[in-house]
Structures are given as C-alpha cells and as structure tokens.
Length: 70
Figure 1 (tube, rainbow, N blue to C red):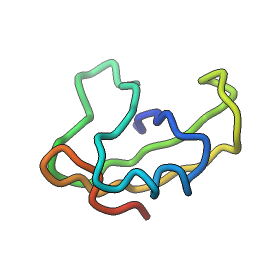
Figure 2: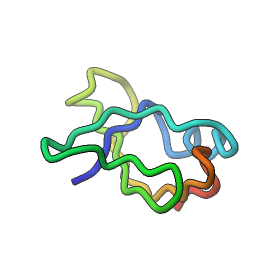
Figure 3: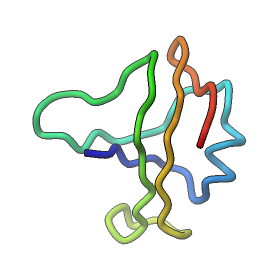
Figure 4: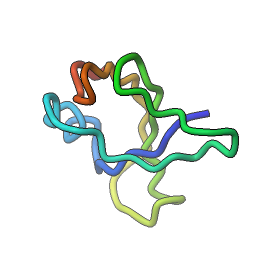
C-alpha cells in the first residue's frame, strides 16, 4: 500500500528535501510511516481533491526528514 502525499508535483516533493513529509496514512492495518527508511508514496488528485498530475515516488527518510526522492 502507498501513502498519499500532499505535494502537487514530484518536483515540489523533491524541493522539500530536509523537511518533514506531509502525508496521509491509507493502510487499515497500522501505520506505514517510518522516520528512517524508504517509503512508497503517491499523489492521487482524484482521491485527494487536489490539483496536478498523479505520480508515485520512493522517499528515503532519515531522522524524520526527507533525505532523497526517486
């Protein structure tokens, strides 16, 4: 399962390196967020009522901050 992120573009997500991740949990089986590790995230405007295109990304977290976006 993926977590939903609150960024309109992947470029906006990459510009947030060094900051906390803005996200919404989607799992019914417990939290997926990890302060250290790799997270699979998605921006789904049709589900989130936002704007922009749909995208998926892998976010590397370190100490609760975004370290890298792929």
